[in-house]
Amino acid sequence: MSWIDIGHIDDIPARGARVLKTQLGCIGLFRTGDDRVFAVTNTCPHKGGPLSEGIVHGNKVTCPLHNSVFDLETGAGTDGYAIETYPVRVEDGRVLIDGDTLSRRSAA
Image (cartoon, rainbow, N blue to C red; front, top):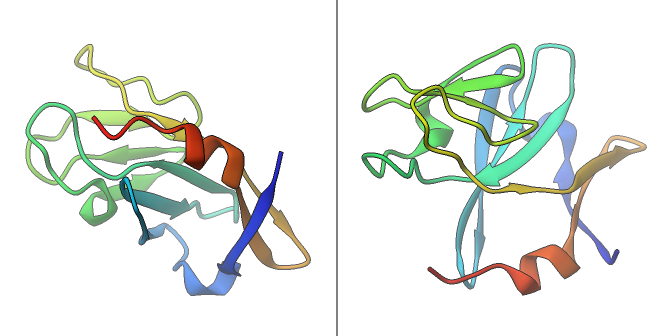
């Protein structure tokens, strides 16, 4: 894996999100109340809602448009839809995302 430093963990609010813009689309970066960080596709596959504007609870996010809940670890949704997840880790307070996975991401 080729890790890319994308910022400090404090750049993402606790129980909140930030958006990482890539050439192939936006990725939501989510921080849980216990400081775990997850990276997932930012767009809900059902209604196209911006997941980064949803409510973070535990390791899940609720879509702001239709209340579907997605697991930030697996990408599984409660309504049969799923979102893509990306490897991310935190080292010395810095958030790192796997650049190899981003380069293989589909533009669709």
